[in-house]
Length: 442
Image (spheres, rainbow, N blue to C red):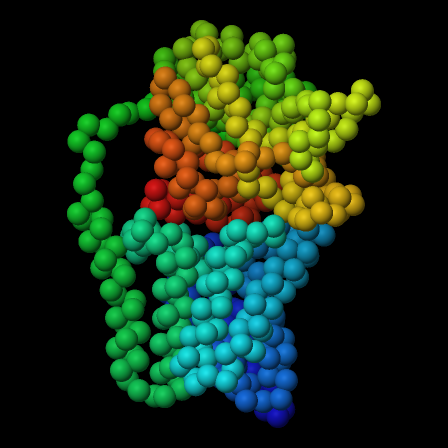
């Protein structure tokens, strides 16, 4: 028994390390993901017919997946130590818990079906993790290929879960070879790696390019305002003037100027935007340059009745709701769209609509904290210049969300974010690279 424990412990650690090394900017050795689950599945087979096997497998899975979470998203600690520990511990618990349930559900099946059941359990977990209150799909297996877009052009048909299925089936063939020593599984493994790659290259080769594409001049702004020392402590209008000054040399008529998330820090009620100093600064630039801007803002709305659990009361009996907002501004049009996919613990407190006291646990990273208001469904800006999809930070890791914006007619995806929180870590690099997946899917 001691030998099994030591061996299983070692294999669990190996699985966690392989997943870390395969993930973008934590190692970026992408092919390792095709064998990363094999050691953990080997542990599952060793425990399949043992007493308390499900509980033991949960423990070994927790070790593997904790290493995976820690090794790939340690950069969350750069912003909040408490939030990072909650992310590592709780996300690992959800991952390992799903595998533990899968182990219990499928343990009586033969080896091939048992491992297939565990693999299916993981893919189902990833689907659920994209669509519920505790959603944190950063570590979805399909995201591993964001550095290899030429491998996965078929994501436009399957989305990232197609990549997850690819990974799990490849690992299934790997463990079958380890268990049965039949070289047919080696051939199947090689075929599973090669065939999707050639399908991807074929899609690229035969893709029809637009014969008359419409060009859009775009100016992308990165003011490098430090979120720890400047963003929430210096004058918001001075920050905006700095952004406008940065853009000035590149402005030309009809250009779309894209600014970062929450760049307009002069928090305002949306109906009163025209009376703000930010409006005065920007609209002078809009009139003189004939440009139009898509830029992040912190905004509010005031209501006579409570609209949602995110509404807070005012002394005069009214209610207000705070938003992380994308603003479209031109000399003829002013529109606002609110962020819908919110960051856990900072912008959204899970289950707070049922348990309001949980709002007190929100993490304050400067600006507005606690649950924010959201749109009920994805929206786009429809303008004379084109149709633009504002994708605010965390929203960019949700392929179905961006796909709905494209179905509404979006012609340009504009991802605006505030990734200065993570400093010089893999966090912003991973986030940037995931944008390639959204481009493929849409």
